[in-house]
Length: 257
Image (cartoon, rainbow, N blue to C red):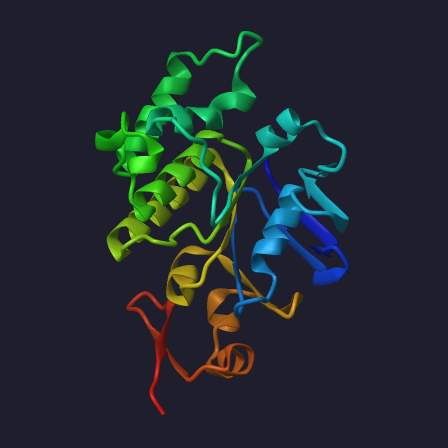
């Protein structure tokens, strides 16, 4: 069980508020997509849920408050992959992804066959196996992004927070990544919260969307209810038409004036 509850969460930097009074819940195994225009507070909200910025309000996993937990205990409950990670120098792809297994290691801190199997499977599924022994510094931007996500997935936390996971990925790798996240949440019951700029991908993968504007919740619900032409025009100052895929998912198409 990994239900996530967020109650009246507010956060910011120094004296500048960025997110104000956000409340939402995500059931075990659910997928919430956080969308909104640039500067809406999407990344700050994820960091606050992860406990990486000062905030007020409450964050609970299965009714358990995250405030006050040791870092190791928190890491078993919540995994986080930032949009712009700080990558350690000198590590290979395999060594880096293995860091995601740290919260689960025993007293000796040595990975075992099960940990290596988890990492090997993720490298295969994210098209990184051929790069397993490459230093991180030699990877392209898209390859580094996939390695960061592999580390987060290797953590196997009950709640997975991903900040713009498809940044720098071509459409094929973006789809493969989101497919894998969807497969793992169904297999393991992982609860997923992602920020996404691509509204069409957000509509196709997330079960529910939360639209932020100026740090506050402007709308929340099923993608078809949140992604309306009127709402997107108001919140994004954009000219768009909302189309539909054959299975009914919204497709956001920009239109020229």
